[in-house]
Image (cartoon, rainbow, N blue to C red; front, side):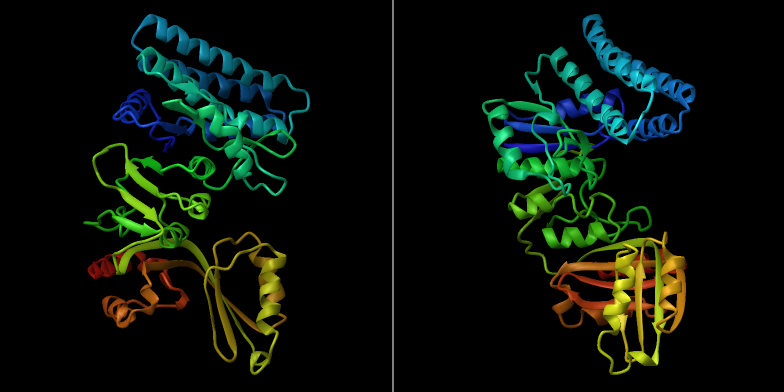
Length: 434
């Protein structure tokens, strides 16, 4: 059994939905297909929910009508026969009727809002299942609410999910289901938050012991540099789970950093594939990777560097603990950290509580703040343990001012902090490493 996942852009219009149908029927292998909402739908539903929470029901209804018209156009383009168009129209009328009912709820609340947002995936999967039926492609549509559950901590109940799901897909050649949405421990509609539909696919792969999880996007795998900035990048043939996680966390947009954790835990390979070129190898993420040295570079923007300088730090124990407790109090993660005898420098990517954090840190010493920074992440197989790698990196960027270096904290990652003004130049110069 293989798990396929297609995101919002892959089902963003009629032609792309038709392409997905072609891709999942290229062979006769049994598969579970996870679909996201049609591109733009979830954002619109979130906006509708915010309006309803504020009591702006008339404005919300206008937005619902506009979204419905988009789906009526989709139906017209997706189906070829009058009978199939009628079936698609029935899907749109049914679920938009339910969406419109939210505007009649006197005290629309956050729980209602989670249910509202789930209609994006419900619409896409029902319309897609109707399209498969119109093409005489045998499949079953399975609601994620029938098996996808999270515990009171918001974590997927993988063993429980597997026991529910396996009998439902047994002997079924093709199963269509929704990404992102689930039931919580109280039996209420909820969502998976981290990584959305990628996370769903990873959970399903782990739960059923799939042969492989395939995440299909409009890019032919994870590239060795940012193709939006650098010319002549190329897809990486293979990555370990740890390498992929480092790249995802430090800026590679193709994958959410936590979305493949279930697959990693249960040793299920994850392959990144392109809907535009299905014959391209893509990137295989697994336990092993034969390629050594530097594999890829990623950049993470909107970083703030914070330096605390204090003679109280000299030969003192507990100083760093006190610093970390400040960030823990304000629930702000730290990306990088370097220390000297009298100073500590660190970075964050969430400035929401920066004024409060800065004020508390002033009690420890002199505080310096540098905003508009970028972390450049160089990833490879045990890259931090290979002799000469750091020299190669700094030879490439000898004219770039480097604010911080993180080296040795991970076997797979060397990170540099630079001013964002140097980002493009740095990525281009580092591309000479390949």
